[in-house]
Image (tube, rainbow, N blue to C red; front, side, top):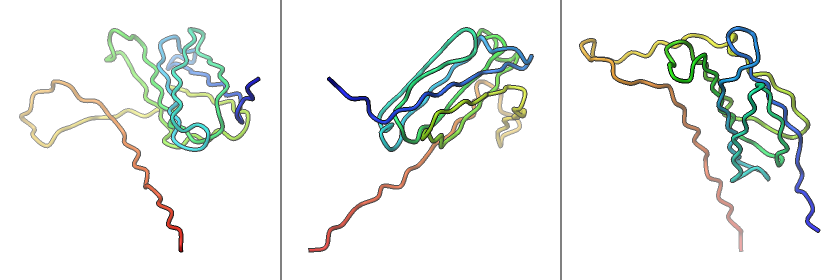
Length: 133
């Protein structure tokens, strides 16, 4: 018999720009500390709500909600939490209507647009332990 590590239920609901459940969504939870470290979840459900049971700890929550997955120009919302702590049962709504437009520009006004995308990076400081002898 294997005992489950300390884990909690997490319910995430994605809402599109039209206020309806988001059918076209991408979501991932990447565990960065605690019992979550090294875990990675990519849940999907066409009704826009996913339910999972995950180990306690800190995660990076990264989600995208698009109007048309074949044409991001019709509308795309990116929602991220660089620190998403799971230490109890959680219900969270990710609502594309609450996002704000982003305008990506480059320093050279003569540059031809080809591809641009926002991104993030989380830098974790490594803590070293030193024992006194």
